[in-house]
Amino acid sequence: MFLYRSKLLRTLVLFLFCMKISSCSSNDTVDSDKVDPDAYYGSYRGYYSGEDKKVYFSAQFRVGGNTGTTVKLTSPAKISIAGNEMELVEGEERPINVSGTYYNYELDVVSSPEDSYLFSWVRNDEKVIENTVTLPGDISVSSPSSASELKEGDTLTIVYDVVDDIGSDTVECFFGRRLKSSSSGYFSPIISKFANSSELGEKKCDFSWDSYFKNWFDEDDEYNQDKYEWAVWVIRQNVTTVVNGHPEEGGKIVGGYTSARTQIVVTR
Image 1: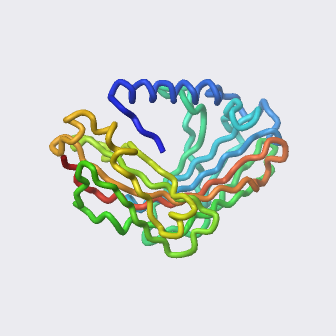
Image 2: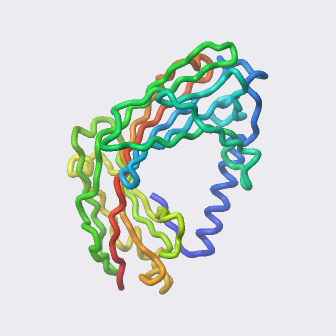
Image 3: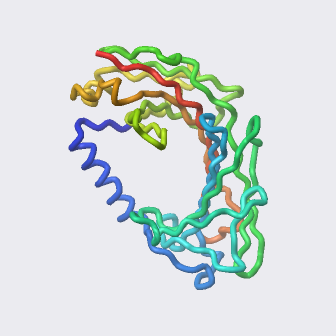
């Protein structure tokens, strides 16, 4: 759960968060032909978005463990997902280099995503390493319904539906907002909470007003429905540390399923 008390504090927290990432994880980059591929830490991710019907993939290699220097693959090395070569994102060419160098790919989904997708990494010695990301089952928000009101003092209960047993997956519930004038249409998370073991059985997350909202809504314009739109959503995720081709440093594979956003109304 994260909670920001004021605009000034939110700015400070964001700054400190970025500083923490930069200080704990290297944003430097080294070419793959200069390091031993057996020494890479590998991070592979695949998330399906129920909002825009796409699967978003990323892959990143580091040397020196999971916070070490990032690796840029040089020919003949490359990384592909489901037969599609992934796109290079060079950290040193970005205006703010927080994450270093990594690889992305977006895959449009016609009806529903596949259960799993194959990452294929060709090393500089042309050895091929394959890892599979498995997506969790479907998850969606059944309550609150669209246009429901959250009034001051109310408890927000997010009820979610799944098509199968949660098993060892985690479920995180989100409340967020966006500017109506936003061109990206992206809802920024304000408050989040992992469903605990008892809530997993009931398939819900409860956010009491005093614990989660009171300090956030301490300024009148935070309620301004002419300026902001509000939404809730849930993310289901699995993590495995059984990763092929990383014998020295290991790695992780993360699969996620993000529900569509359900817009609600916040009133005094």
